[in-house]
Image (cartoon, rainbow, N blue to C red; front, top):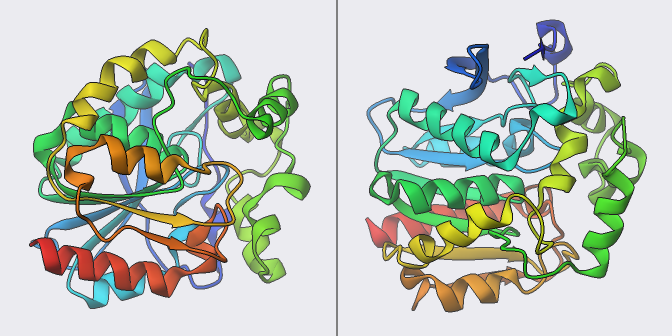
Amino acid sequence: MDIVRTPDSRFENLPDFPYAAHYTEIDAGDGTPLRIACVDEGPRDAAPVLLMHGNPSWSFLYRKMIPGLVAAGHRVIAVDLVGCGRSDKPAHKADYTLARHYQWMADWLMAMDLKDITLFCQDWGGTIGLYLVSQHPERFARVIAANTGLPRGEGESEFMKMWVGVMRNATAFPWDRFGPAKAHAMSDAEAAAYQAPFPDPSYEAGVTQFPVLIAVQPDNPGAPLNQAAWPKLCAYDRPFLTLWGGMDPVARGGNVKLQNSIAGAKGQPHHVFPTAGHFLQEDVPNELVEHINAFIARTA
């Protein structure tokens, strides 16, 4: 497997992101070493809050939330998915499959040996994160799902048909139309920081392939994996909370499906932020921190 690695210089002087990268090396599946990066802040002996981002973002998405979570005494880990952020990037779209993403992050989780985890996951970070919960429930003390889901080939919305159609043969990510900066007013420096991991399209195979891997079509190769995981996820009976952006066209109604299906979601104080969009970490970061800290304190 061919790997590209973003130069460290691309991550210098990013706004409100002074965090060092911590690296864990796993096997890509064919013997190729694959380096996965994360932010790791706060006391090492505290239970971890694991933050998992979606597409086309990276741990920079959590820059406004990390300080408030650390201040509450948590160990905060924000991981960069393979192909994103400071993690290594397999160079070809065909290198990325749903099964590989699941295995890569499971191997990272085991290598980090994280336990008693509070998971906060959004978009693809949620799909991958919820799959990890289904396979390793004993490692997760509680889960917070935000604008995400575990699609099982049940059909695609009009938005998803458009999105997959745009990206199926794409060789570069359309940042001007679909990047996180389009969903929230931010500075030019912040908008540039989202693109920092991708000096040119040769680094973008992962973020351009992600839409094709969303298992919404009945014949999607990833659908059987998610179908098999779904009953295990539904049986998860530890505290499970949904925090949703009400203006999100991508995961509309997904919060209700999770609330009605997952054992641990019953009776939890689920919340919708009516003015927040898909990247709610940009829209309501302080409110999210308040809900996460309160949820952990209440369910400790």
